[in-house]
Each structure stands twice: as structure tokens, then as C-alpha cells.
Image 1 (cartoon, rainbow, N blue to C red):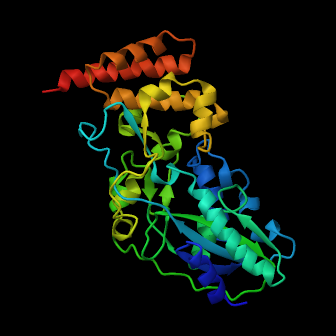
Image 2 (image 1 turned 180 degrees about the vertical axis):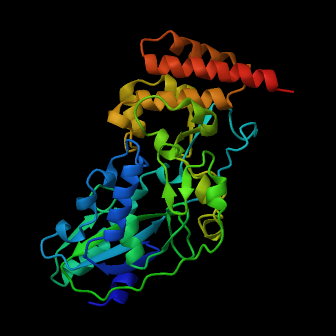
Image 3 (image 1 turned 60 degrees about the horizontal axis):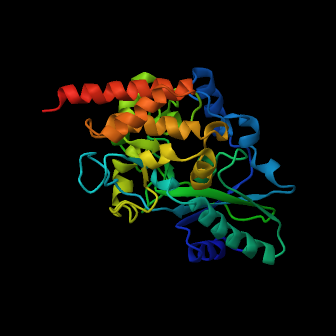
Length: 348
């Protein structure tokens, strides 16, 4: 079976790139994970940091594994229309969601990978699909398979599509021709580094999770106070380093300006919902300890940053949380009310 045959099947299923690499250990990725752990850049993040040895051993994913077929699925990107917060097109009590999380795009990716796997299985080969879990460093596999190059924001950039993609693999016992790596396409550009609101990109391709907003909204415990203003109206994820990236801006997804369905959330409605409702609505997101209080924490900070300072509903809800029985939410609500007051003082 040829790689071109698999590529045609994958593209027909909606994938935008497909490449092949062997199952030798991803040694560069392993060394990077271990080094960044030693520097504390992993913060409390688990994922592939949990066991660098395991997540960089593709051969261990399937008995007799010989090849990794790695592919990219596109999702709608582009600069969010939520900014500035004062834009009349959006309420000041809405929060922003990163584009990859607006719907279950991973389900679409897995379905497309299943089509590729079925093609391999029809030829008598065994397969296993791996996507969005701790078993494999997807970006490292995709880089080695020639799907794209590493951007300075540590995302994989796919030619013609930038980083508005999700990555996944089909592990198989089929022996397939390996794809050629793609050379770096960033050159001297450093827009992602300069555009990160918290300076989390500490070196080209290196992100300090302790400063990364996309991680801070997922992590347990309080959001560090020095990063709360930078959080703005975000409640899940952060796309800033993608939005300023030239290859991503030029991609078909980067040109999609209207906000995707699910990219905004009513914050007052979120705070009024019980745990079951929140998990039913947002349970496919990574929520620390599966505890909806962290969604409420994020919403409280977003209200402090974005709500109209004279909105009595917002102040009443925040004041209620200052008197609630959850110290974490109470502390963030006190901060949010103080933030509203501070914004009032500087308003023209």
C-alpha cells in the first residue's frame, strides 16, 4: 500500500495533510520534555509530561508496530470578533473560548483517522488510533512525519493551513515509506513571541506553562493574580499566538472572521448553572479534577475584566460569591469587584 493512496483516502475524509514516519523513539521530544520539567516549565501539567518515556515510544502503542501515519484536521480559526470588549456586537458579560474547543473537533479528527485505519485494515494490517491522549507527543510525531514544521509558539504549522489544525496518528504494522521532513518556514519572524500577552514563549518553540493563559484556565487552584488582567474575557484557551502568526493568518481557516458557534459563553448564565448543567455543556473540555468550580473561577475573572463597571447584575453576582462557601471563588470575586472599581476610576 502506498502513502499516496492513504493520503488520498485521508484528504477525502477531510484531513488537510498526511505523512508517515517510523516508530523509533522520539528522542528529541523526550529530551525536551525532561529538560522543561527540570526548569519547571511544565507547571502542574500532566499530559505527555506525565511519563516522557512512554509518550515518546511509538513502538509500544501496538504490538508489531512499524509505521505511524500522522495527519492534520483543520478547524475554524481567525481572529475573534469579541475584541474589543466594548464592541456592541457582543455583550460585555460574555466570555471567549479558544477555537479548537468550540465543538468536538477531535471527534471529526478521529472519524477521519478511522477512515485511514479502515483502508489499512482492508489490506490485512492492524491499527490503533492515537489522538489527544497521553500516549504520544502528537506534534513531535507530526514533525518527523513531514506534516509541518515547529513554529516559535511551539505549535506545528502545516503548509497552507498554519496551526489551525488538530493532530493525530494511526499506528500500524504496515511497513510504509517515510515522508520527508518540512524545513522551517518561520525565518526571523517572532510575532508570536512578541504577541503573547504574558510572555509565556520564553524561547523559540519553548512555552513556560506557568505563564501560559491556555494552561492557567485549566489548572487547579487560584489563577496567579499577576496574570488575571491579561486573561481578559477568556474562559477557556488562548489563541493569541495563532492569531498573529502570518502562516496561520493566511490560511483558509485564518480568514474565517465570524465567531464560530460555541466561541462565546454567557458568563452570568454559566455562574447561575449547577454542576450537572455545566458538565453536560462543557464536560468535553479539560476541567481540573472534573470540578466545575474552575469554570466559575474563570468566569468571575472574565467579568472583572470585561463587564460594564456599572452593571448592577454583575456586581450583585460577584458580591454573592464573596459571601459564598467556596474560598477560591470568594477570593476571585473580591478581586473582580476590585478590578471593576479600578476600571471605573480610569474611565473617561
